[in-house]
Image (cartoon, rainbow, N blue to C red; front, side, top):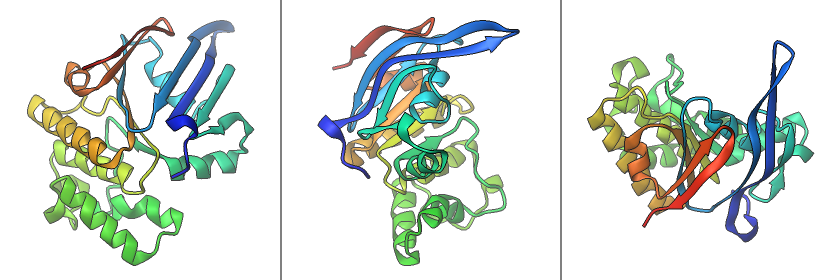
Length: 234
């Protein structure tokens, strides 16, 4: 994990993102200035079309900003080549998806260790890290199961384990509770908040789920591609 200048994991300055629909320009983001610090547990909220997912895609380098700049752990994304950005994202960002995106032919253990394989982490260390994170998430007895033998909540917890096991600077979660019932969603959010407190890994959620908002310590409300409200909860 790279050292973060002034503890800012994300520094977004003047972010504009413009798409073209039938040759007509559409601004998804309209000049967003935000800093998100090490250890935050922050939710980006707002109605559909407010720019939540676009903002996550831009700050992770999955999509280029039309204007403005993004620094992640002090590194300016626009200065990186495609491979540099891909390697940087692999080593610094964990992703949690709405549909978990687990590889169906791999076991839970194999899914969780996959990023560390790409990073070249030695086998013994991979095994130790996977064992610990699965225990933290209550999945220690399910390491040899394939995803289709897990409940929806267990699959999402496996996704959280995969996102966190490589010790990234930042975990981005796009609507992680959308497919879960209330009990599974509450349990998942409580586990993630506890892991955030222990690890100091920064979490940023894109959501309109009240269950996520309730657990977040900071709410950033987007409206029409701009920051409408930025609230730190007590």
